[in-house]
Length: 145
Figure 1 (cartoon, helix red, strand yellow):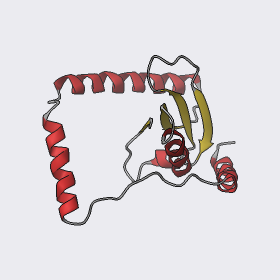
Figure 2 (cartoon, one colour):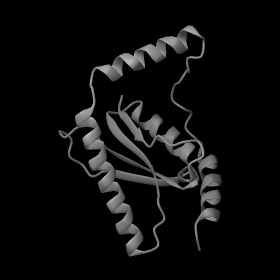
Figure 3 (cartoon, one colour):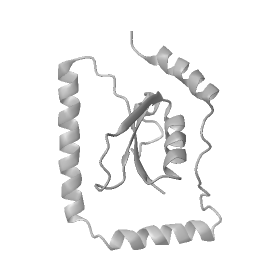
C-alpha cells in the first residue's frame, strides 16, 4: 500500500472548486523515475483515483489544486507563500511534542468508537471514464477565458 497526501481544507474553502491534479511518484528514494502528473479533475475524483492507484502499489500520490496563475507576479507570490508555509511547518515540527499528539489521537478515536460515531472509511470507488469526462466539461466551464 502506498501513501496519499493532500491538503486538509475547511469545507468552505474556495480551493475546493478549483481543478485538482495528482502527482504519482516513488514512495522512497530507492526508486528513481520521473513523477507522473494526471489531471485536471474535480477534487473528489482526484482523491478516488489516487486512492485506487496507491491501494495496490508502493507509490506516493499527491493530490493538490491546480492554481490558475495568470501573471509572473502571481506565480512568484505563490512560490513565496509556499516557501513561508514550509518554513513555518519546519518550526512547528521542531517545537512539537512527538509523543503527546499520538495519545490525543488515540483517545479521540476511542471516544468516537465508544459513541458509535467512528467514521468507517475505505477507498472511495474510482470514477468511471464517463464520470471523468463529465467532470472535465464542468471544469472547462469554470476556467477563466
